Image 1 (cartoon, helix red, strand yellow):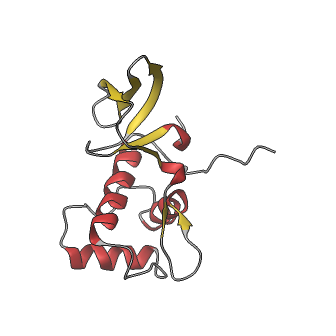
Image 2: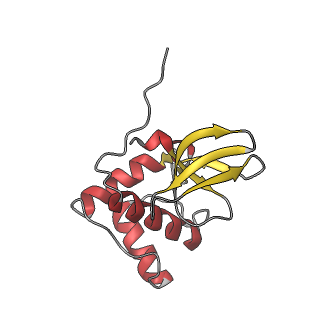
Amino acid sequence: MELKEIIAISGMPGLYKYVAQSTRGVIVESLADGKRINAAMSAKMSLLTEISMFTEGEDIALADVFTKIYEKAEGKEYVSHKESPEKLKEAFAAVLPEYDRERVHVSDIKKCFSWYNILVGAGFTEFKLPEDEE
């Protein structure tokens, strides 16, 4: 399983692995419990490889943020997304000190930590972006 197969679906908690195209949408499998569902074509889906975080300079790919968290957490789960906003901001600043404090909200940090913990729980050890094919 690679990061390029992982999808976040708006309005649905957790992360999903792309399985196949269906007549009415996309079949995905939950990373949390392995259940397969049909996600409607009208659902807003985002590949994790296409998401980035705001920093004071260039935006940084979410995969690179996950790599930094993985190094900081020594390959284990990191801060729970249920912690207080202050603790979440402090933990995120320890991982990514240059993050843009005005444009990155606590809800973004919660999603980042939640998704990271789901991926580590699913056995991810590398968070690589797909290579550009030229």
